[in-house]
Image (cartoon, rainbow, N blue to C red; front, side, top):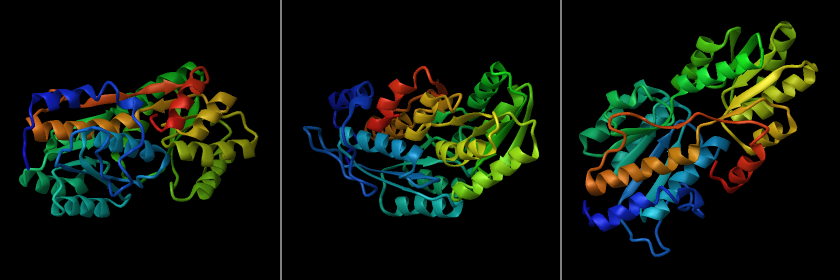
Length: 328
């Protein structure tokens, strides 16, 4: 495939970043496909492999960002995901075998990703990390990383919990062995002046997770706060558990969703951490195309940070409009 189509096309690609959040529909589902609308077609296939279902509340926004980038750049794109590290590794290997020109991948399970990513690099396929694995992407051979420093985000959460005067909080972890979730809780632990209790819940079982949280609250009357690490866990599990106990327990979460914004506006939650997942989808696709077309790398060897930002009752209504559009 042709590597260069001229600096004019490159300038167009760079200019798309400024207008990314005003883009329209995506690039057509997980089987991808992009182009049209006067955008010059590029003969590239970009694959994204994540550690979750691409249609989830958070990952659906990542997917939209990536599909919008694919459409804007005139390339083909597909996204696949699995919460099972071995299956995610298989998906990366499948992307290599299918002829992907560039691969974006999450490093939630860095050991599982090491082999297939090394295989991609050996084959001359550029790889960009996103979302998870801010401490692992360089060692794996990726050319860049887009995401949030989860430890820094966790520290910010801990500081806000101090401002609220809380004394004992649950950090509810919904995936086992996810390094990003561990970093979030660790950041809270290192800044929060009270006690942090790690509680394992299950993303696949919201009702069971609700029961687990309720039991923890009933067993310990000193708990006065909960931090969930996923927006669905906040509204489907933690909030109902708090309401069932009738306790005055503060709730905060990582990441946004329509139900989280509603809870914030209603005063049922303190805040939500915004990692801007739209950018985590859009920018890796752009970075891969620029590298394929002009050998560009972005970030100077450092991660490109998309968060943390904080959404509260004060700005929830404004952000809700962007969430409805699928870009936040």
